[in-house]
Image (cartoon, rainbow, N blue to C red):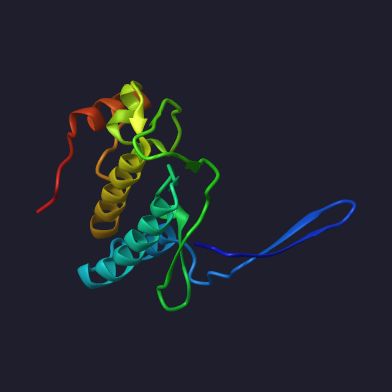
Length: 160
């Protein structure tokens, strides 16, 4: 996770000093390369999973895991960012709020009968890994309703 180092306040501004991740985000890396090879994907994904396990052990769910929210340092070290829709929950707690990025949403969020928070992060991790290895998300559609239908059905193709 990106560490908050210092906060300064002036009469006009609030300045936040955060840890630097000079390698950009994972989306930019994949756009530049098209996709990642299996070795790089394993190295990066392992760090992401460890980071998610760390926050889940502290009862925090992220709810917006996506390529843009994975920052890299100059040596492909991972930093998870953008906890804007994260939430502290109790184990087994059901949540009704819908949030996240459409292509990464778990079916249970779309169905809207409530969901256990940790599992939606695990779904998003699967979508993230797919995107890392293939250079695209598994679910794509022309509109939100069609996208939701594909996700609920689990309808996607894995290229040869």
